[in-house]
Image (cartoon, rainbow over all chains, first blue to last red; front, side):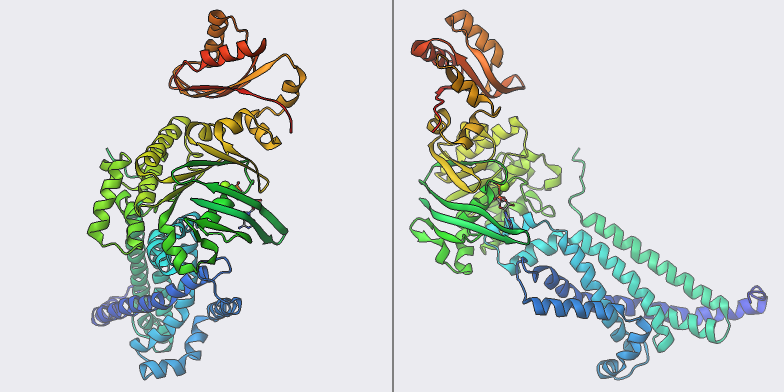
Length: 237
Length: 338
Ligand SMILES: Nc1ncnc2c1ncn2[C@@H]1O[C@H](COP(=O)(O)OP(=O)(O)O)[C@@H](O)[C@H]1O
Ligand SMILES: [Mg+2]
């Protein structure tokens, strides 16, 4: 199937398509990924906080039924395959975006799929804060809200940044998948040209660009996390 | 004045009920340095956490300056905790904040403005001798320095009481001494009541005025440090004073022998030559029944138990001779079992 890849004509045509469609596709992929991640964090981080503080011996215990329901909902959403979830949330997508196709509409299922994942990642990060540190804050009269905003979140910032990086790269993958059902961006191009029209060169170019985007997000995230971490010993001459 | 009245604390766990505290009563006068000593698992941390109500006692009451804490709602307790600061074995600094930020932390909690908090924090860092480390992060400091930052932080809200839960247990003896020295000077200068929780005799001996011995959740002995340690009555106290365990039989065995407990608190002398010199200069042939001393940087730390032959005169002479050396304490130990 790759036999005629190198023919001059195909190369020229592919290049024309790439030059015409890729800039917009890259932009769509990036903004959908970044916006979806942002919304997923806005919903997922508070839930992650509740998962940690709401435990029986946490700083803000929730009724055990509430906590169980929250855990159950998160597990449920995480176990539905993304493609099926996209179809399941069509009514919600239509309600919020007015349509189920197009780039903005794909943000809805992406956020629904990502926020439970983000909640779990946030939970793991926040659990890294030592109970002794929390006890210290309590001994100084900190309120639960102060413990969350001044101790738990700031103390786990490096870990939260690493996990946000994991989230954004995963969501990038999902956003490409959303190209199958109406979503825009590089995923849509890869599917439209590669799967429906057998223009493999375009598909490969789209995939390579996705890989490059993941690499960029990952290395920026890792660098930020390391830079944020004050536990790393800095040699003071 | 802190009055701990008949408090008990039970924990209900999967394995059953743990009685961490059993009918504990103590009163701690203002301005005191009060030691609470006991083996690991004796209930010391639970007791100290009851004093600031991080743990609510199952029974009994904690009264500080006439206010019964057990009756207070959580909101009032939070405010009151600014008067009862705490330092910990693991320092518990915020690792993502620099020293200045750590000392500002309790001031921020109390709603102080940034400039006010910063000014006070810098003063406190100066007091603990770390004025130049304001911008350093905890990971860049030694254990002793980290505990100094924790002390500065604990002083930020002008507390009336300082609770120290094994505050020196993670530190080497020299650093321990400098931290204890700092706590002592804070107690003297600021009049803060200090409660020291420890499993180390040497800590109590070098700084506390009063001591309570906690064993298996109950106070088995309390009083002035010299009194409790020179006449240990309970088994738990005797185990602390004679860590070898077999000293009971050793002391009880010989009616002719009298015993002196010698404590080295950084004395510029090594223990054995001191005993040898005493034999030469005073003719007192003391034998060492038990010794646990260490020499650090030319200074001796630890304690030893001497057996002294021949009556009152010899005992008095030996105590007189030994205590001439600075930082050496010596007192007779009686052995009657109650
Ligand atoms: N939160 C808790 N739940 C169950 N048991 C506890 C808890 N805290 C302390 N204990 C138990 O209470 C006893 C006293 O513990 P602690 O006060 O920490 O002793 P110490 O500080 O003297 O070593 C121990 O047996 C310990 O296992
Ligand atoms: Mg303890």
